[in-house]
Length: 135
Image (cartoon, one colour):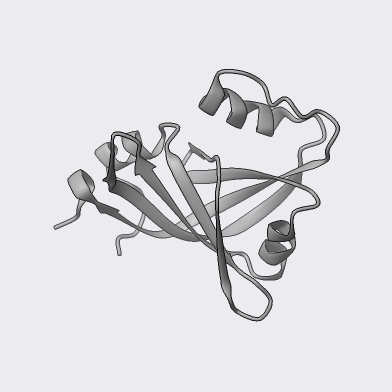
């Protein structure tokens, strides 16, 4: 595992709208992973959740996460980060989810009647595989 920052080629790949999964821990310690949208900005990772998601409760109880982003053209090429949520922000104006949706779909998020929460992840370690494999 390498420490941040990500080298330019890994950062460039990680900044694209890749397929991604995020994993966190349930209160009993069992891991749970789900597909997610994310943004990589200023060395941190932004994710956004419906305020009623259990995952939000899990992250508030234990902020440790792992997120893997896979190159859609070559899923063996991926970047995985391990870190922790360092900030939760209510997304009252839906600005963060709109940025995420636009990054992935080119359009604002269509669901406008649900409360959203953003979580900022600080990267502790990372690794790359496929064409981004570290020697």
